[in-house]
Length: 493
Image (tube, rainbow, N blue to C red; front, side, top):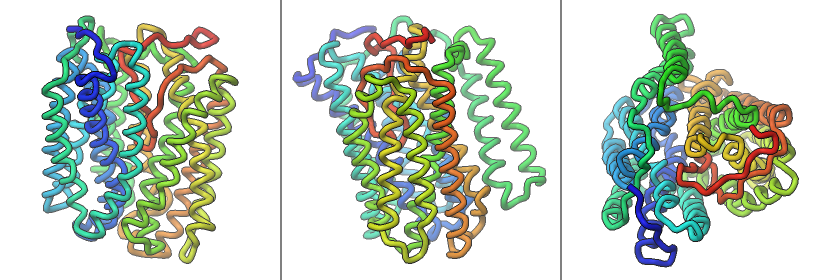
């Protein structure tokens, strides 16, 4: 079902924009405030570093595995309908998070939150691109991106203030009134769907993706505590690997796969996603550990730790569009090479932070270098992904890239802390925390450098897509099937 396009300045247009901004803000706020609350959650519910890893990864697991399926559901059954279902689901799961009496129940509720996020996230931008008239679509997407970036910026302040003045539980309960407003507004916006959407949903592929990612994640997080040869760890690892292999086989043979493997025939597309895997893995691990280390290692209050990362968000909001314009002039290869190298340098500088370090002299300069590198990377990266895919994969290209970014964060948060020696109760041991944090930052810096090298080896100077970009501290923005025509890569993909 297709609806007539609405104008940006119309009452319906303002209603669509408000609903989608508030809906996507639920996910953006959750991505930034939870890290600030991790030390308080650990003190209240226990569980050590492994438990805190699961609080983050429980959410990322279901989100990464189901986000492509969520987009398909919207195209088939109605984007507004799935958007509202995702919003309500996310709110109910948030309530369960806020009321969770134990760490295992909180982790389970976080996994349910990820399911809601997978339904909600693709529908947000899809509603905008399917509803607005073509001439108003860039303006609407730009407003959605900018206002969503503001939500990302205020998240650490809000989360830190709630944790410090009341309880970490309020960071989840805050989602409830927002979700009610979104659901009420959405009742009065037009429905849209794709008449050419696949009639078959790749349920088997989605199930194998969840089992595969869950098994590998469990093995990575639990191996330091249980031992790498523990039967449960070995079974989880083997099951996860087998399920991921099965996922690839199912996608290769399916008539309507969730992830069409033919999309990776483009060297440009594959290279851009490998860069995404490296850079967003480093990004996820860095912010997971930095906010915790500022509180546990340097004695920052929750609100001060949240505010400490604000320069990164502001720089991304200010410079992403300019970086995209630069890449349009000179091609994406140089920005996508220099950007990760600069971001890696910034993360390596964070490894120098220790007890007694000054924010202005030690933390802030490292974050500025990191943020400049990230700003130089993200817009060209997103544009390259969109431009490299064949026209028939226009709707799925950025969905794949978004899933890759979430998966990168999932695996990095699970793997880097134990590799760096952070396990058990290391957060309560200043010496162990300091040493582990330094090693983890150096590993994350290495991931960024690897991303820069991969970009130089695999990316060609295609003409990037002209687009608007959201702040990528959570993941790259999604593009949908209703997107306007895209520029083609110079090498034809």
